[in-house]
Image 1: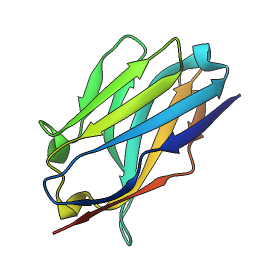
Image 2: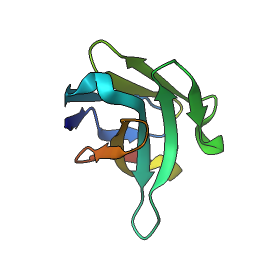
Image 3: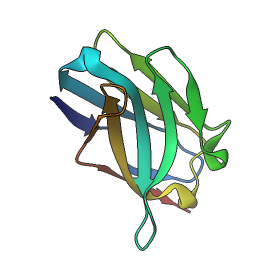
Length: 117
């Protein structure tokens, strides 16, 4: 079992930065992939970025060059550094962990990110 707790959301002006953090607890060594998703009102939940236990990263095209995902496998934490934020980045951001080679998935509670123009 894995539990995820997110922090770091808030209100920021366009062009500013935020850093989101997610801490996993429980069977952290069973986690293969950790990532961030976001969901704006009326829209589907989409992948922002993820990182595997081996360090492979993937980013949505809309955030490439602006966001950076990092992970500490030993601590069971993942962070998302968000720079040059745009109003289009406004959404609820969710941490996700995939464990046991895809057989289990866990979600955090979500944290609101609001970018004003």
